[in-house]
Length: 423
Image (cartoon, rainbow, N blue to C red; front, side, top):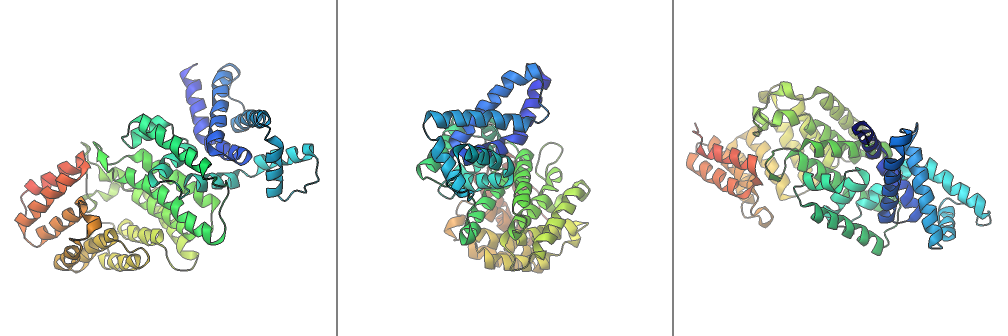
C-alpha cells in the first residue's frame, strides 16, 4: 500500500470512526462489539481501497460494510429479530409491521440519526460507572478516534496499560448493562457534568502536563477542543457546553506563548501576548457571549471562561482587571467550592489587593488535607513571600514545590526561581 493511500484511509477513519461506532452501537447495544465491527470495516477498507481507490462517500462505504457484518453476527447468535423489535419499539414503530419493513426502518434510522447516535456514544463513554481514567481513555478511543498507542503516548503510559484499561471499561459497561441512550430530565444535567469533566481533563493534561519532559501537549488540547465543538453542535442550548468551549478556546490561544524557544515554561505574566492566537480568542469570546445569553445562573465552566476572558482582553499584563477576576473567583467558589478554587482566588486577591491579602488566604489552606503534596500551593506561597520581600521563605517554598512536581520542565522552572536573585 502506498503512503498516500495509507494516510488517506487514516484521515477518513479519524473523521468517520465515532459516527460509525455510534451507529453500530445502537444496532448491537454494545460499544465493545460496535468497535470491533467498525475495526473489521477498517480492515476491509485497507484491503479494498488501495486497489479500487477511496470511494466518493467513504463514510457510507464503511457503514454499509460494518452494518452487513453486524447483521451477519446478529443472525449467527439468533438475535436479529429481538434487536429489530427493540429498535422498532424505541422508534415508536407499530409491532405488527412485517420483519422486512422493520429491517428497512432500522436501516433508515441508522442512516438518519447520526447526531443522536454520536450523543449516545459520548454519554456512554463518559458513564459514571467508569473511573475518570477509564472515561478519558474510552472517550479518546471511541469518540476521538485515537489509537491505543496514541492515547498511551499522550499520557506517558505503557500501551498494554491503556489497552487493559479500555478492555475493562468496555466490559464494565456491558456487565452493568448501561443503556445506549441520552439521559433525560434531571439525569441529563447530572450526566452532562461527567461528560464535560472528561473533556476538560483531556484539555488540562494538554495545557499543563502533569508529568514527563514537556510542559504542554498541544495535541490533547486540540482533541479536547474538537470534542467540545462536536458537543456544542449536539447540545446547542446547554449553557455549560458553550462555557467549556469558551474556556478551552481562550486557554488554547495562549499555548504557543506558554513555551520558550528551548521548551521552557513561560508564565502568564511573562508571555508575549503578540503570540496569542486572535482567532481562538474571538471564538472563545463568542462562545462565552452565547453561554451568557442562555439565561440562568452561570455555571463553573462559564465563570472560568469569564475569568480567562479578563486575561484575553488585556493588551498587556498591567491592564489585567484583577479585581474583576477576584470577584469572579468569589462567584466560582459559591457554585464549585474547592481548595483549588480558593488557591486561585488567593492569587487574584494578591494581585488585586496586595500580597498580604493573598497570603492570608493561602495560609488558611496550608493545612488542607486535599492539598497535601500539591506543588502549586507551595509555588503560590513562594510568589507571595517574594513580593513581600521574604526571600529565604520564598526560596524554601519554591524548592519544596520543585520536589513535588513530576513534570521535568516545571521542576527546572521552580528550581531556577529558588536559585534566582530576588529583589
